Length: 196
Image (cartoon, rainbow, N blue to C red):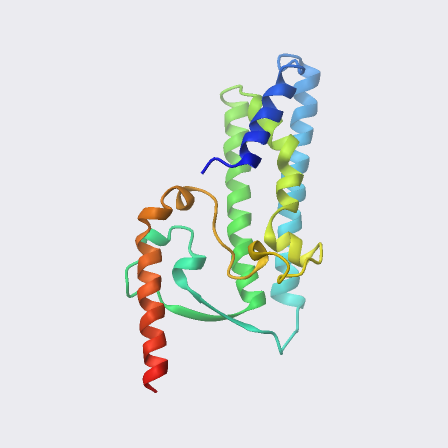
């Protein structure tokens, strides 16, 4: 769904573009610096949080979180009914899985935008990502909870498991077979608990 944030992002990018000469070599040089700086800051931030959670976090009394495999798999529509099992993860394990997805996504954006710029000669993607890169990083629930100290009870978007609003899943929300399957599994789990 086209959100206000997406609209403002496009408006900002195209309005700034009209004032910036994208044919000038000096401007392109600074856009490259801005783009790669924001991308490496983003990747480094996620990587540092991941390393800390994976190897240095020693909270043995950490809360457990029950999630379905489809809630942590980017291509959940490809799972069979048997593969969509309920997992019992600690919050750190769940956050590590989410950070892995962010790292993959940011690496793909970095590679694809570099391809568009150096092979096809496009400068506009550098501009858009440079302008909004760090703002988008600060809006991610993992960053808000782990770095900025946000309270997970203060906002619904910060409660784990996080709602996936990006990509095809938001467009196909009404036709999502995974959501229907998850509801069936939750109902059957509740019935089993009541029968015991």
